[in-house]
Image (cartoon, one colour):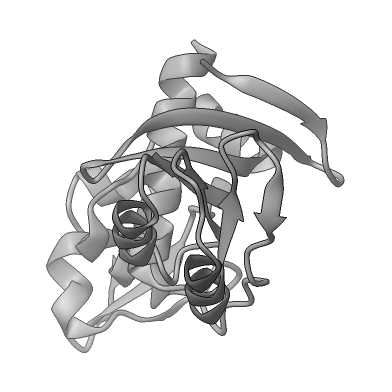
Length: 195
């Protein structure tokens, strides 16, 4: 089920839904960049989940042309890449390119549910580096578990729905292809639910 949380900032809209992401059941709260969404719809483009292609796109600017790294040349010249990048051949043998794709979704929170803290912690650890993490624990939460969650920056929600520990603020230093891929996976599910 797609829950619309309302507007959060110019050009973005917040949503929340539960889905399966790389084998883990998560409830994800996220912002959709509506301008990027409309741009993709107008080009007949959905989500792009090929992490190697996303890595290649990250190496390209959005406003100018730059030399394409040789390791990404084949991926960025493929038929699939023609709607997400512009690549031209350099008369001297290389290639120049520009990215035509932005990140469609910003992850605000990743939440999992578990009967026990230990299992919830294991799932939350899989998503370190992707956004703030939160675990709903159905069993009684012990003081050492609260201390451990705090140490790892994981928020805790008790079985009665009360947040007893907020997740640590998430402030990434840079975009990675793995983070972009997760955004695209969330966007994939958003497109299915929004249809």
